[in-house]
Image 1 (cartoon, rainbow, N blue to C red):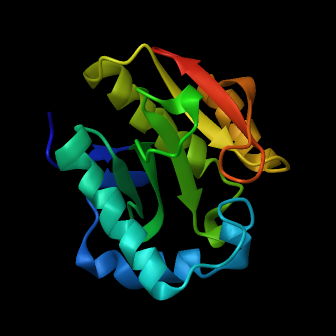
Image 2 (cartoon, helix red, strand yellow):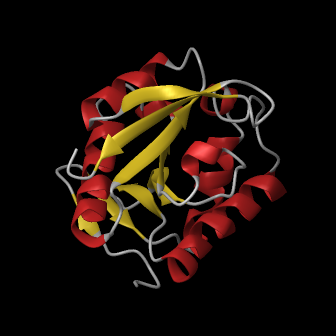
Length: 176
């Protein structure tokens, strides 16, 4: 079980471990209402963003999978985060399965980076995890994430209101 994320390189990205040097970029990304519109609904305060950043980093030593920083290969700067999680959300359909998630700085939307990053993350999961499937949740109206999920092989299997609002639940079988 890996205690830290392996480095994975794609054509444009480096998926790597979170670092203290990523703090300001991470906080700025999550303070942007465009980023949080479908993820929490409100821009995050710096202390909340920092706590979530540390929590994401802590997934690896506990779960053996987790989130990567999605860094621009050209300068190694954080432009997004994502991968696989287990957040104990209270959604029965997520229990016992890795949950995929991704987010990018709004200035990096629309160029296929989410699909590129998550193709690499899910490829790693298929090769290294003993999970029959991966699931994800997407807020209604988030058409961009719905398109990414479809490209990655996710299919909608239902809805849940366990978070206090409705989210769609998607599943992707091992190997996509």
